[in-house]
Length: 257
Image (cartoon, rainbow, N blue to C red):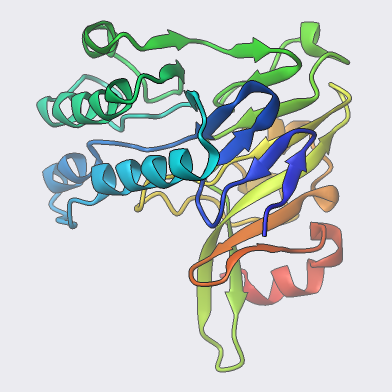
């Protein structure tokens, strides 16, 4: 089932991706390519799946939507302080995959997206601090948008948060499932859409009613959290729409750990 997260913004199957129909754009966030190498330097060895996962999400998303534009809402790479050899190799594979399909590709800069100029230039990828097109504002989410967008944006689409919902089954097992978030954005008179992370290892923030638990200053400071509605990605079941957090208070308290 397809859900409309904001005017013209739709879920895509059970993928951590959104389709902005008026722009014919597939939007993803938080790929965090290079994470495995970074973890290995800290003595943590995990299977190398980030690139494969990103390519699969994009392939399926493009097949389902036929989008001509791919927008990455930040954190295409993982390491802050440099562009590693592994990141450059994986970014080249990712952008090469998209270029072969003749797609326009725009990277909205995230807080991890440093030292990218050489690989972006090589593959003809544009990087911007924020992207505003026909009433749709794309930012990473580590900063709040400026006043010039008040009353202008139909939807504000961000990443950064890697939201997930913790759910307990009848046996007491707790699953942490990635989720989209949709909420009113009063200051901008708009709708906020938070994308789940594409990265397999970026399980991220557990959705709660406490502002202190969120990474993004937008969610901490500017969104009525009781009005946030999660859309959970459940393997084998697709996307599951949940009530607003204000109506889930008892459930959220039971599963917070």
